[in-house]
Image (cartoon, rainbow, N blue to C red; front, side):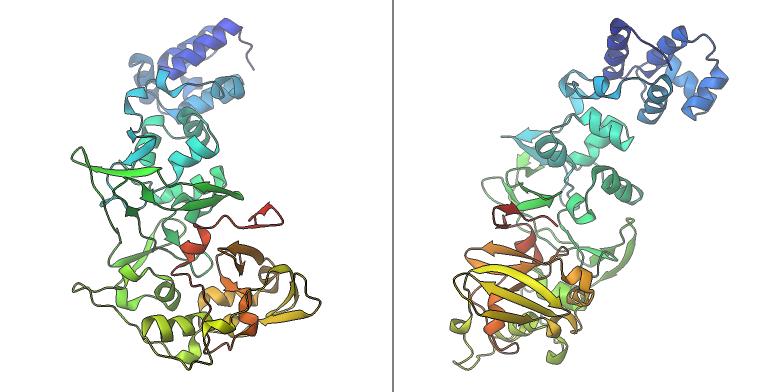
Length: 422
């Protein structure tokens, strides 16, 4: 452990912000004359050639080596990281381009995996880029390339980033969805770039906080701003949580959950004809059944089974008495109603099958969207509470959601003034 005067600490910090790792090493050597090259190589876990490069080319920088050196000398991290101004650093000329406060994504077509690093750092945690790079143990310039779209985040870093920043993978990449409990992830959410140059991604829920990220991303090509309507990966790639591409499928081969939660624009062939995939009706959970019959195949139902029988009374509380059954208590009503989720949990939907786990089933929470009371689970499954009064096979609620993203990223769900937090 070394003790530094305030002036010496300021010097080390100034050198770090200039990227002069070699001079920092020399400063430490002056304090500890026993630090031979061999010992330094052991401390920094590097080859002697790398050490010589840092000593001779003072502007070369390695965050990994820098962190190891700071740990060795027991330097005050808070003093180092909490007062850094990115505009005064060696990477300041490479900071993200912005337009009216929004980041300009460098290459949306080649890199559609837009990540949340920029707005997580700038808007939610309000930390410097140097601090985040320090936390992730990567060089600041590399992080800059990741958060502005100049480079893709390598798959081998996905889990590390999620662990360090306490994010789910679908929060790190807001376009990702998973319908099988995190075994596979697909790029299923469209990015709609309006003429107002706002990338419509609605909101992201991170650590229980809902963040409005419209006006966060815009797209530039050849120094001009272009309205990009939809960006898909076709054929559809499915990724593992470790960043590996598991398989690719054509749009007419997607899973049941991908199909019934996809945006309409995705389900079009090259001639803009709607792609219809037929699943046995008995395999479908009720919501998919209704969507298939009414919204996809345009089947006219009998007048008796119409939306007017959808009950949307204000829900005061819910209880999970036993598997598949939810007790609903409505405001200003003494009688309790029961919502049976068996047809969802025992359907062929891998997504709704997760409700078979009673501990997970009990994690459902009430949200309110445009006056419609819904129950939503941590992985996004949802059902309108008014379904208690509906025929599970034939009726249609007066509110529909085209995709899980319209629930997960479009709502500010609150109940009793508490944020939606799982």
